[in-house]
Image (spheres, rainbow over the protein chains, first blue to last red):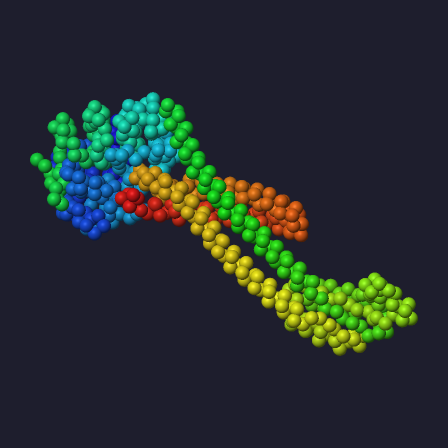
Length: 243
Length: 291
């Protein structure tokens, strides 16, 4: 099944393809990232193609999260070229941010589930918030993603009744709902034990098979050995492609 | 065990909702009591003003019919609420009762003349209106004298003005306190949900979409707060009226329904506006600013 179902904005997602792989879904050139007035990362250049798995590594405070925040519209950038899923990050307006986020799947270290409703209702909220209207289609899509992450029988549970691994899988199911072009994951295994981390990683690699790119921030270097993939390092205010 | 945890979580949500409804109700109840006080203060001052009386003494020998016509003319004069004719015979009966002896038989004839008691509407119980009245009727042949206590009317008016200013200032203060209290309650309730609000934004929900259920909840808290406040107000009026029967209250349907509706309107408007501003505050904040 092709996960990139919606053309439109995605089709003209900027930039000619770099190299041999498919089209670029992330393209950052010469951008500076500030938190308030502090320069966190300077002259950032980053290209990610569809279906690619990319690690983002670096020490705590090296700017990994800030880079991700730029990508999902939580931090503004003022100059350079910044394109993601067809949106221009430099000219992005507050009003457009919700639409950008529907093109992305975001997975957080602390899950960010809605604690006041069941797993199923967590997913339902996202569908309603992103403009789905038909009850039948919504139920189908929810079943689909719950199956995909192995939570097919647990939709009725409240988030606090799920284990850490299950909560993160619910977070990933939520990120998958709108068939995103890119999944941004901020330390998704940070709160999980090694066994559960393995499950989550294999889930991510499965997802890339469907054409969705995954950009995952982590400081767990064991993962890099066990699941080798392209790695980008944040260090001393710069971003490097690590050979 | 999971069931149990679930129950506790739901109970916690319900308790915070309930406490915000109760605090809204308390504040609305206070405001309602104040409104009752204000309406009654107005009635008391009107009562005082309307009890102010001007006496018109007629010339001896003016017939009862002529006096009646004059009383009718006075009653239709601008600002006059009532003009009652007291005939010489009636006055003699009253005076005899007061003196305890039949002075008419003693003197041989009734020395009293007809009088007309004039009372003004509360809006016209002032020096100017009374002077205007005096100017119109003092020239009449049938009128001997128009008499009233000049200082009294000014005194009444001055005191009422003072009391009104005091009560109004108190009202303004109370309404301010009411706004702050309800606003605070709602902001606290929403503060507890700020991370939830942020999560909703992170998965692509628009501000309007996030706001809608919160505003609806605001309407509901305002509504139930008003229901509770109105219930307490009716109870309060019922028991107060048994102590102070002159107080307006349950019997006055028009005033009561205005009061009840005003409590509903105030409750809902204040709850919704506070919710709107509080939630916008969290919608605008960035994730790291929430801690």
